[in-house]
Length: 103
Image (cartoon, rainbow, N blue to C red; front, side, top):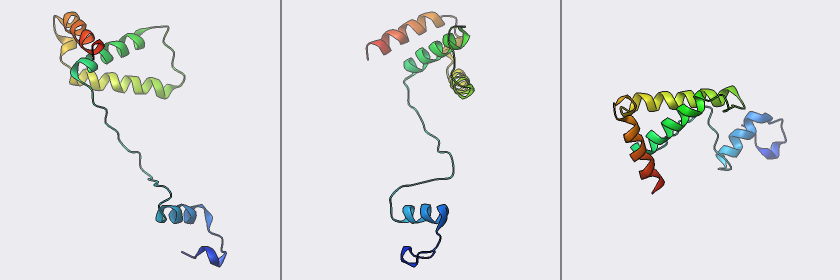
């Protein structure tokens, strides 16, 4: 890589490499995965809210990406939680809501 003092045409790629080397910023070319931690009670309350919002005609998404994210969250919660399939789900959900509200 030619130096700044040589006055050559650096281009965007060289500038990014230089700035990364100097520690000005970190850039990755891959999408990072993040993890969100929820208690079981929080997950139940969130799952129920997401399900109600998605089933509602009044809930509007600004972009298709938002709807896809909601569906993915619902799917992941549904595959993790067994409570929504229990006979006494409404009681379990109410206890979870009370617990979360008191946190």
